[in-house]
Amino acid sequence: MRHALSWLLSLLFHAILVVGLLQSVDLQPLLPEDIMEVDLTEVEEPQPIITMPEPQKIPAPEPMTELADLKEPPAAAPLPMDKTVVLANELPPPPEPEPAPEPALEPEPDVIEISPRKTLPPEEELEDDDKPKKIVIRKDFTVHRGHEARFGRAMMGDYFSYSTKEFSGQFRTADDRVVSIIDARNTKYGRFLIYDSKNKTLRRLKQAFGKYVYTIGPSVYADEPVTGSVTFLAKNDRIERFILMTDDDRIAHYPRKVHVREEEVAFSGPNNDIDAGISLPPYGEGHEGVIVIHGPECVNPGLVQGFTRSLSMHDIATLHFIPRGCIDEEQTPGTVNELVEDTVAALDYFAGRKEIDANRVGIWGNGPGAPAAIKAASQTNPAFLVCVLTDTVKTGDIPDRATLSRLKLPVLWLITGRDTTKWTPLIRTLETLRDNDNRAFSIIVAPLKASQDVLDAKGEQSAWVEQVADDHASLATSWIHSLKK
Image 1 (spheres, rainbow, N blue to C red):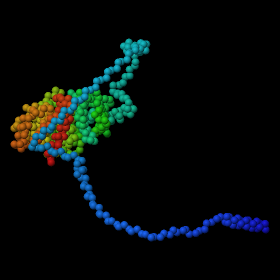
Image 2: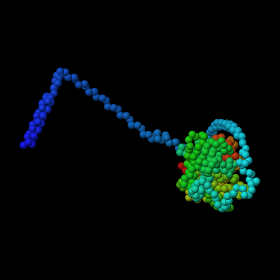
Image 3: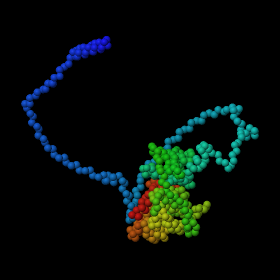
Image 4: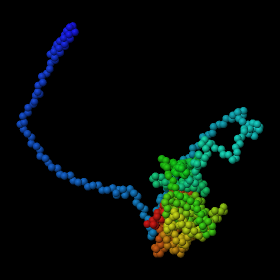
């Protein structure tokens, strides 16, 4: 009974509490919002719509083919067969600034003698027991130090050792800059020579430290003051490029080597086998080829290779052989008639090579070899003849008019050197044969326009260096390539 009563009172209390709370809250009446009434007394007239004219059609831009064509350099015109071309000589280069005087040497400090008690007595006064002991090593045993001792001679000493013959060759940069390394160690220059086609500088190299680092001297006859450095870099089993740093450039360059294919061969001559060297372009077969004749004189092979490699870089295969008498120790050169006989044999051998197009093999008479090349071409039937007449050739050594008239093949007469006026009578004879007898003679008079560095290298065999430096190879090879068109 008590529980029921308590529940009833509790419910009543809560009911009264709820009613009191509801009465204390002031609720706003939910009335509709006032609507604003507007009287429309005046209506604006709509503005007339003006029709705009149709836009004119803009013509489409012309294709960019013409602009693209302008970026490509125009193809070089072939050298004419019926005219004489005289290449203008450039102004002489400005004189080189005089070298700064060498700084005076600092005076040597005064030498203070040390007490004799702190120095060893002279070696001859030592007794046998007091002499320092010597380390005796067997004669058939090689001592190695550094990396060779730590990692083994076979790995670091032999496998990664490259012959210095790999250093010479033609190197090309990304901007078509050619740097030539000429092996002139066995000549009067006594060093590797470096020629830069951009700066027109010809300098000598000197081994600095290690085997692959060389410094560049100021000329072909001096090693100091140093004007740059060359660091040869290898890839796999051959020299691939080098780092070139010079005073003429603010940044380093990395010329890549043009790997022409070279081979030493021997072919049958009139008397005995003749040793020869072949230089081929890097790739392919069916190349145009030339027999390079440099005269009966004995020329250092390094200078000849510097020239033949420049020809092979321009897609011309070459063969050069050692004249008779140059293999002997006395080196007694043979005669011109013997050189002509060997040239005819070389022409037959070279035309039979699979890498050569037999229908496009010619003869290249270089300097003193031009007379022999002319006689050999008059006796055989080569595809063409190139005669490079330099200062080392005497005008009386050129064959007579009757021999020249028998040349019914295309001939390039490249007359160069410091004095080209002495060839004026020969030029007139060649022009007469060309104009009256319809001989395919291209006559190019190109005075030597090399830099002062090249002119300073004047000597008996400097013409080889001049031809590489003056880029005669590109001039003659463009003429050879134009013959097949």
